[in-house]
Length: 205
Image (cartoon, rainbow, N blue to C red; front, side, top):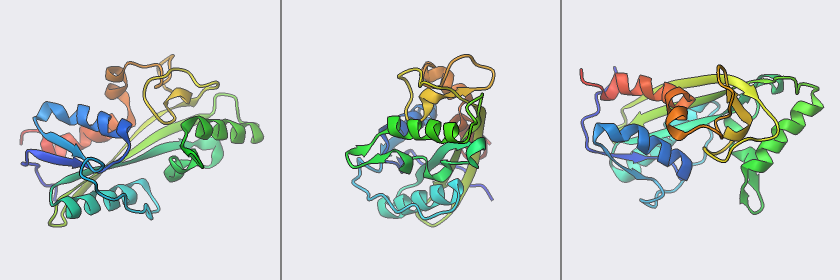
């Protein structure tokens, strides 16, 4: 049974500034104050799940328990068809370097693997976003959103974050990295998951 959200404060269970900003933008129209896990000094739990949904739920419940507030977590990534769905739930890990997280390295790795697979002609891909909303009492609701498109090379655009500069969504001539944030928010995987979340938990009954 989905639970209606009636609080005025919500923890965004992420330490990723780009994700925190996008989620705060999407939740703002409902008059809810958001605070990030980083701002509260909450630790990042190890993502041991085998799916986007499992990892989102893990992060949401950990933050809700630690903060004693409802928490919303996102787990998202890029799935490339010719790479068997990689990087998938390991999308962020592909960006890890000794100097910190660098998505230029991750994007280059995607293209290198596509080149090795002789699959650089309009490689199909999709972004996936799982959203999990959890309460301190253990209740939780989860939602999965997607957006289909293809990989382009070289990267284009400096907006967005993560793999956005190499992902061109279907029906558009530009990448997520080239889109205005408002335009991306209308069609993204996160927006898809958010529409489901809002309808189930936030919209007037």
